[in-house]
Amino acid sequence: MDNSLQKYVENLVREKGQITFAEFMDIALYKEGEGYYQKQNPFGQQGSFYTSVNASESFGRTLARSFVYLTDVYELEKRFCEMGAGSGMLANDILNFLKNEEPDFYNELTYLIIEKSEYLITRQKELIEKEHPDKVKWIPFDELSSFNGVFYSNELVDAFPVHRVIRMNGEIKELYVKEIDGALRFSPDELSTPELQEFLDNINLKITETQIVDINLDLRRFIEAMAKKISKGVMLTIDYGFEAPMLYQSYRRDGTVTCYYNHTQNNDFFERIGYQDITAFVDFTSLSLYGQRDGLEPLGFMPQWLYLVQSGILDEIEAAPTDLAKASIKSLIMPEGGFGTNFHAFLQGKGIDTSKELKYGRPAKEVLNKMAEIFSKNETSD
Ligand SMILES: C[S@@+](CC[C@H](N)C(=O)[O-])C[C@H]1O[C@@H](n2cnc3c(N)ncnc32)[C@H](O)[C@@H]1O
Image 1 (cartoon, rainbow, N blue to C red):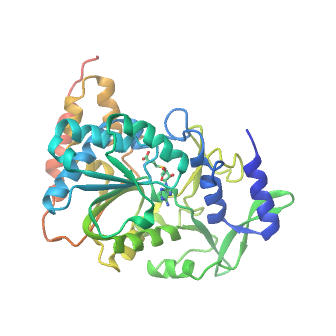
Image 2: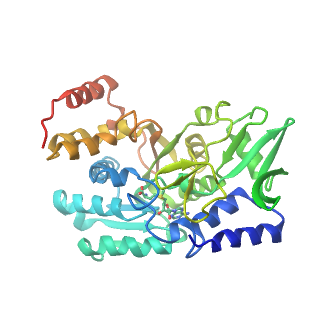
Image 3: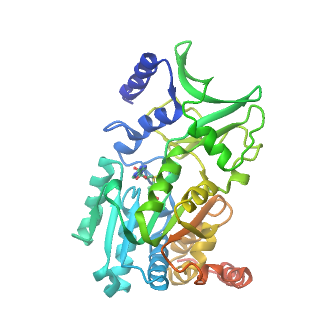
């Protein structure tokens, strides 16, 4: 393992005395050529973690169905924008579905991708342009404006750098990265920016003594920018996380930021720098509150399984050709051990008729009965 990024961080910390954890995380994940997302494929078996996209193409197919539905209900332009497209597999699965099953929609569709990692843009192009030449346009975030259509992300916001704050002797301090006794460690000091206290005040959060809270200021910048960029459209954010009262419960004493290396979770933040993922749970309350300030209204917040079920994933299970394929799709909606428990889907909209009733409000009983029917079917082996 080449440790040049480790050396870079150590030198920077020595030079500045200390850096925020957000600065550290941004370097570890995104430093050009060396950060975790800027080299080798971070996803799937050879990477450090799986996302829903790796579990089954039915994730993309089901989202595609829901985007066609939302486009229709809200009379949007046929324009999708995906941010943080990773390996490009989600875009590819969505486009494959539309090309085969909604060819008219596909022909009229414009598909945009916003991606921070130059390395991943190259990978995405390699994958998508084989089947869908000239269909996707990669644009910088700043170029998105007056957006009309469906904007979405899967596990984007959890990959934004976070600041860490702690309450000590009744005061809120920030945890910096500092060199102590020759090693990188956390060290408390004054807040690096008043925005951190503002963030806590906005959700009316009182931290208990010695509790650590991870604050995602980029989430605020992102959603405030999106509220200005969308003129008429919906925005779907899928990620792990909760509403603030759940997320910042005092039993989560050590915050939620954590690392993944070779599919194993650890909290050795200063080891394997650039070779492991670092990620934190998403605060959906802040996404909602900061979005609303500029007219991005919440339309629905629900567990990922419920969003996928209401969007038609049970039909995917029924149509899957093998037990293995069925099991992979089920992992997307299983409450235990799958993508069911911590993952949520949050729909926001602007410039649309928010009084229209969405199918996502379907009665729980109807949804659960259909789930029970499908899950109890005795599947024979392949
Ligand atoms: C955890 S990965 C998820 C990838 C993919 N959506 C999936 O579900 O497999 C996070 C992705 O977001 C990208 N990303 C992070 N911050 C970003 C930003 N500010 N702008 C655009 N892309 C960003 C990363 O480079 C990476 O592609």
